[in-house]
Image (tube, rainbow, N blue to C red; front, side, top):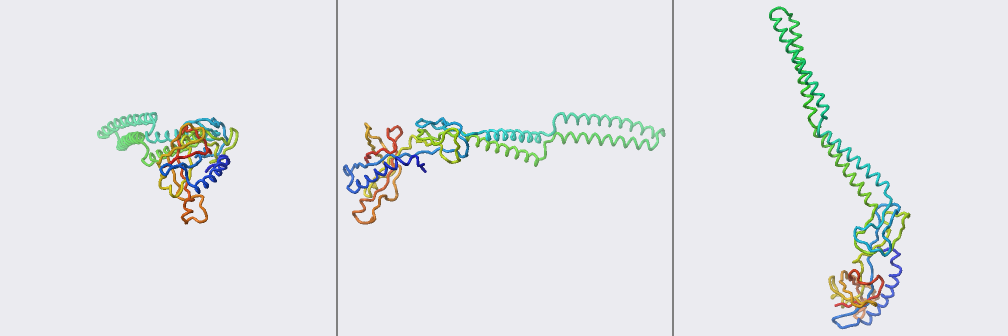
Length: 326
């Protein structure tokens, strides 16, 4: 939808031209049957550039009349909050990824070495218990050791065996990664953190608005230091292919006009005609008189036709033109 700033002058001129067009179509069109000339006018299809979020306009490199290319910076909004959110989201990604790696790799190497030292101690104790057990059993067989001493030696040996087994199992468990459910949860948390970081980066990128197409800055509505509401236009951009010629044809002429038909456009001050191509034909008549079904009134029915003109054609919005058609 066009803003009022662009509709005042053009609408006034278009109204005058439209009045002239009514008279023209009552009296007929000039030219031969094979090639007709209509009076039309140049209209622009502006792109009104806005930001998706509200904020203070910090800079606006795009001045009125400046030519821009797609991707050129048009204006920026304050982004301190978005910068902080992006930094926080990046830190959360690092934290979540570190936790996922920790669960996936099991115990740290120093912890493994400590458990291995405990295993070595348990094995040494087992060797000692085994030697003492063999000695006591031999003495008991000869009657030099009591039955109780023999039982105690056997119990100490079995205890040492159990301690060695327990130390070995502790090392095996420590070398394993976390449980599958814990690993899945850690990976999901890391993925969520990355998504949050991408969202924060997107919000930051939206504070710098760039041109989506080649064109010319026609008008600016806000200056640096002013507040821009979300969705409110900061400037108007006229794309290089944004000029259209509007003309009106009668019901009799309508079948000859369809998208793709080539036209020639002439205007005061142009040395040569400008080529144009029909891109739109209205489905409903305009300037309809009260009685529309009589044979005479049918000639007064006119249909809007829009034709695209090339960039750098030398025409400006609102100018009257003569259009030669099929």
